[in-house]
Length: 89
Image 1 (spheres, one colour):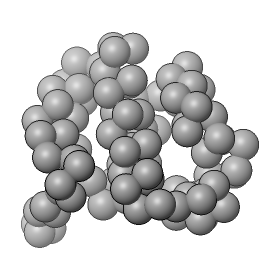
Image 2 (cartoon, rainbow, N blue to C red):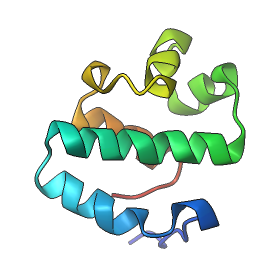
Image 3 (cartoon, rainbow, N blue to C red):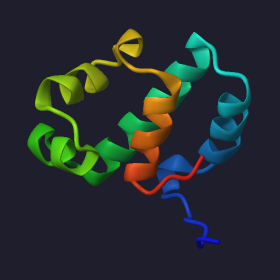
């Protein structure tokens, strides 16, 4: 099994919320996942091009993410993106 990742100061408490989100995904849960992902990207101060490379997404999709366009992403996709930044859900 992989080693657990400790969340940065701005992300403490996110893991419990993310765990409950995966168990019962709703639009509110997708918003919570998206907010956590945006927080990680903001904490790392990644621009759109670097975030796109890290997330393996085209830049327009990263812009939609940063605008918190919750309808543009599925719960599964958001979980995958969080995994790409090192947050296990």
